[in-house]
Amino acid sequence: MKIQLTNTLTRRKEPFVPTDPKRVTMYVCGPTVYNVAHIGNARPPVVFDVLFRLLRHAYGEKAVLYARNYTDIDDKIITASIERGVPIAEITRAVEEQYESDMGALNVLTPTHRPRATENVPAMVAVIEKLIANGAAYAVPSGVYFSVAADEDYGKLSGRAQDDLKAGARVDGEDDKRASSDFALWKASKPGEPSWEAPFGAGRPGWHIECSAMIEEELGSPIDIHGGGIDLIFPHHENEIAQSESAHGHALARVWMHNGFLTMDKEKMSKSIGNIITPRELLEQGWQGETIRYALLSAHYKAPLDWNDELLEQAQKSLDRMYGAVLRLNDAPDVDAEPPAAFVAALADDLNTPAAIAELSALVTNANNAKKPAEQAQAKADLLAAGALVGLLQSDPEHWFRASFGEQAGEIDALVAARVAARAAKDYAESDRLRDALAERGVEVMDNASGSTWRRKG
Ligand SMILES: [Zn+2]
Image: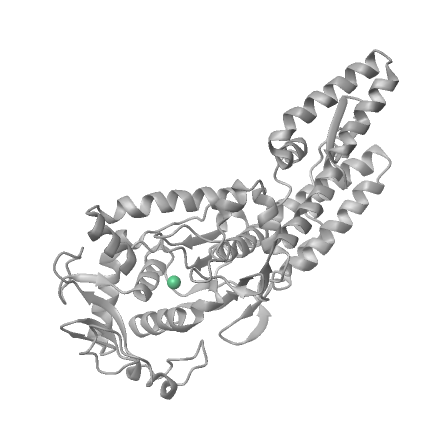
């Protein structure tokens, strides 16, 4: 299979060729486990989950190694830990659990590795020691800094020239660094702060070095693909490259991929505007995880995505149509199928999820038009195989429609059961009355050989 991906580093869409097809490696910067993730934070894990699934399909499930970290060392986490007098882990583990549960609801597969920064500090110290020995970094009382001037390649990912960086603002407590663009690899600890021992003085790692070290530790470099949100290109990914390449003398990653911004009703999501919504809140409002996932995949990953209720309603409608087709073919026998070629080709073309969704929609039409039992079985299998490759249609269709009606589902079940009883008793007037009552609730009843099922009216 020919996969093409847009590489931020070369600014081109290029054929993807892994170094070793038996060991394909990818890394995506994970959450800072201080605050619960909002819907914008959920876009990278969902987008790169589709890539993970596609690579597994192309190279085999065991051949793809995917690491996504937890940033559990962070100034806010440390401040909270001191203020509340509790260990870091007490704050971060609860947020981690919430994150995993949200990702599970969004059908995000568990990555192969999920390293925590707190458990990889010795690896970070080792990279920093290498950089000091190389002359790429220097230790001063406030910490250890990477010397941007010592790295001729600096700026190659973001396209920023070194001259532009000189104007960078100084950060409090970093008065002794040599140049304003130099960034912290290690911050000397102040009294009362959690700290780790190191040959260059007790302290804690900077954010960028965490990823560089965890990539080396879990996957070894160069890795095939490094991903994240577009906001991470500078300075985070630029600095990851600078550190890793200066320490190891070779590329950190061959392909760099970045997903676009997510806005909320055309505005940047921010705490100060108060327009932040979390997957948890959406699930509590009754939206299903798959609906949220579908909405996140409805735009191309590189394009900006505007989040609003209409987007979710549209996603729900499309999924209802897909599940409706599966439900109608519930009695068709299960047969094995590979995802259809046109669908796979859409995904292989730089993860073109809007084109893949259009292919899914065509498969639904196909399923709805299938008449002969063998055609029906094949159409259902094609649709489900395609859905699985993007993490959609993972629910039982009856469960899907029940769940989308929330607490009303029990009431609807009772009306459907009463109608079955009326039909059995040949009370057609009552049966028709119940059908109308269900229609008023937006429910369509489908009678088939094994009884009656229902779904949301299309
Ligand atoms: Zn990172």
